[in-house]
Length: 62
Image (cartoon, rainbow, N blue to C red):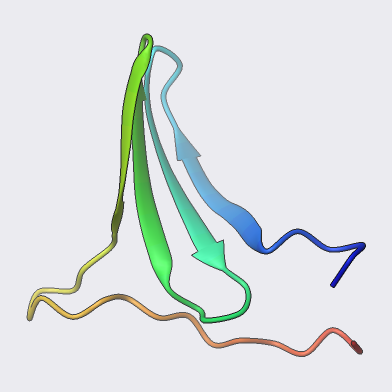
């Protein structure tokens, strides 16, 4: 995994108030990232039942 980043940005919205969704390529867990000016935060993205959103992990020939 030396030549591949662990996290992949899959969604981006905004310029000053930025919302992003990042996926952990090892676990498939989705994270919501919010940045506003010099502040920011990250949290697991949850579905309506409070469970983490998990994307399928695709093999890339590693």
